Length: 203
Image (cartoon, rainbow, N blue to C red; front, side, top):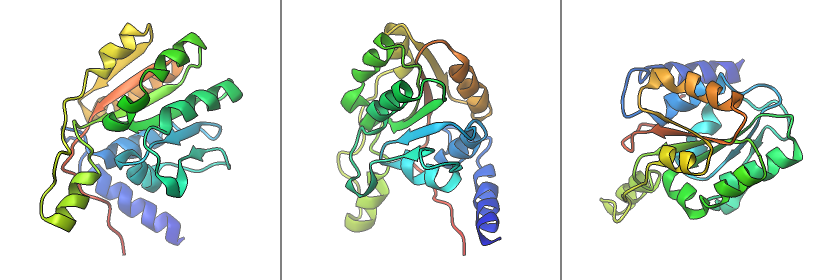
């Protein structure tokens, strides 16, 4: 089918970055898709996590993939993941967010720990509002005030009494996510991603 052809094409493109560090967001999402079971709930923020997850993550049912829609509200991913886990404690819940969006409500992660809402937050850490860089560059010729200093989100998870895993090698993505999903605690999988990325293309 046409859908299968497109998926195969973008998967092949993602594989071109399977040994690249910082990690390409497309390869991250392609690998993450292998951890998304039919009953998994994914909530996503806006930005690169949303752009690339749309290409690679499977949709199994109406609650498979939750996003803020046309409003593009930053920091939607974390609180939505918490509520989804409280409503469906028997299902795996993965939240996708960038470092900028996560910092807007990262205090809510402590609430997840208090309520024992064992979510897995995958944080794309590129030290920037990554989606805005190419947008501003295309429109204005350069990007302005898009880069910033992110904290160590893995250490933040540990400070909250949760699991934290930092991933710098693309070959460690799947094991890190699976380990986090099996933990009896909320978890943050901090993935060091590349802000200089290429989008999938297909005809």
